[in-house]
Amino acid sequence: LSTPLNPDPRRLRVLSARALSIVMNRDVQNFEAVMAFLDATHRLLPGLVPAIKHMKIQFGLKTMVGRQEGWF
Image (cartoon, rainbow, N blue to C red):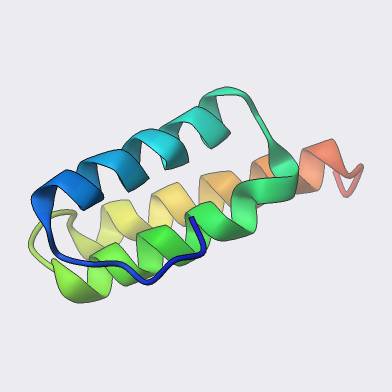
């Protein structure tokens, strides 16, 4: 997930599946990679996810990390 994001639809699908797998498995150690993927996707394809949804997803991921690490 650390490779540069290429707008190729096949590559985007693979990276999306990897990000989803990280989230579904609650692999908190790799959430930063998911956050970077979300940011890159939002920059390259701003119409794909509305800004408010993008912020809510990132907030949710940060909350999951906080709970896992005992912040809350």
